[in-house]
Each structure stands twice: as C-alpha cells, then as structure tokens.
Amino acid sequence: MKAFVTGGTGLLGINLIRALRWEGHRVKALVRSMEKAGRVLNDTGISYVAGDMRNVDAWANELQGCDAVFHAASSRSTDLHQTNVKGTVHLLLQAQRHRVSKAVYFSSALLQENPADDAVRRYVFHNDYPVTTIQPGWMLGPGDVSRNPAGQLIERLIRQMPVDLGGAANLVDARDVALGALSAAAPEHDGHTYLLGGHYAPFSELVCESLPAPRGSLLTHLFRKSLSGAKVSSALGLERLQLSFRPLEETVRDTVDWYLQRDGESMVA
Image (cartoon, rainbow, N blue to C red; front, side, top):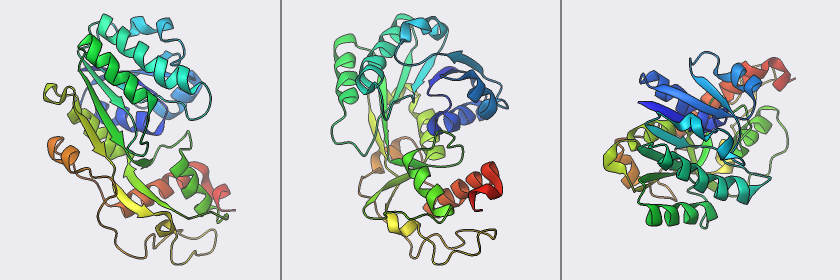
C-alpha cells in the first residue's frame, strides 16, 4: 500500500508512519516544517510534502498514485474552521479526484460536537466516498514533539511543577491508535466509525506515590491502584479492528522515558 499521512510530525502522525513502515508500506507525509520532519522522521525512509491544511490545492497532486490517505492533521488553536473543517472536506474532495480508494479520518472521542465530523458525514453522503472514522481518546505516547495536552501534563509532573489534577479522561496510547488505523484501512471497515478511547483515568492517578531526587529514576510508581472500565466504550472498535490497548502504566512509562531521553537532565534540573 502507498499511504499519504497528514499531520506527519504530530504524535499520532509519527506513530502512524512508523507503524505503516513496519508493515512495509510506502509513505508520503504532509509536514509544515521540513526541518522538523528531518529531525523526527529521518530514520523512516519516507518522502515529505511541505504544506498545510489551509491550502490543500497547493500539494493535492501528491495524492496521485496513493491507495489510502490517513488524515491526522488538525489545529488546536488558530484557523480552526479553515483547517479542521474546510481543509478536511477539501482533502476528501482531492483524494476522491485522484482516485485514492481509502480514507481514514481521525476525530476525537472527547468532543460531543465536532463540526469537522458533521462536514465529513455530509461529504460522504453526497459524494459516495468511503471514509472510516476513528475517534481516539486523549493520546499519550513516545514521539510527542508537538507537546499534546496530555504530554504537557506528563512533562509538568516530571519537572515537579504544580499541576491541577482535577477531572478525568479517556487516555489512549498513540501507538495503539496507529495500529487500529492500519486495520481500519481494510475495505470491510469503509463507512464505519470506531471509538478508541483507551483507559478511563482520573488525572490524579498520574501522580506517583513518591518522587525520588530530581536526578534519580522518576515516577517509579505511576498509579496507586489498577484502573478498569472506560467512560467511552471502545468494545466495538477493539473487536472489529482486532485490537487491544496496552496497559496505561506502560504508556505513561514510555512517555516519561521518551521525554527524559529527548531532553536529558535539563527536564529535571
């Protein structure tokens, strides 16, 4: 399979690209910064396309010859409607024009109302184009160079900074979401929506029982108790995509290890 991935340097994009390459697929990735892409994806053997979702026409010809498009790009701050709604619809339009047979769109299990979801459903209805939607929870995992909100929380805990730990959320490993997306690219999943919420956890559970000295091994006990159940049910997605979630403790440990390896002792100085 030849895949096109948007959001190539985001947490999900990075892990999705690595999963695709592990399975032997060829990959093109849309990236906003070629320099950043070279730093975080230089060992993957993929090709890069410079651009963003505000101007799909500028790079749409790169979709030619692709079998699947995985749309993992989104904006959390500026140009929300232009990027997340109009950009997504225009991507689907161009993918269909270039005869890309499969589209996997990533939404969120945390948003009750998402204008981009409505736009995708309308496009599919009016244009008869197969789109599979995956709705992950709050993603953690190694490779978070863009500092997702959940990753920012982990980073603050590592730095032993004050953190407001009220509330709870579904936390899912970006690597598991990526594996689910690979399964979702199969024809039998066309048109389906799968929730991949992960583990429902109070944020307070991310606090370790004790923090050793700053230069010691951090977060040796990440959870005070075992967590079970989920606020968002992922049962259908897990069954149909033949997927299982790794333990949340493993996800947080790997996330912490990645931050420490990337930033060194300055993280805890």
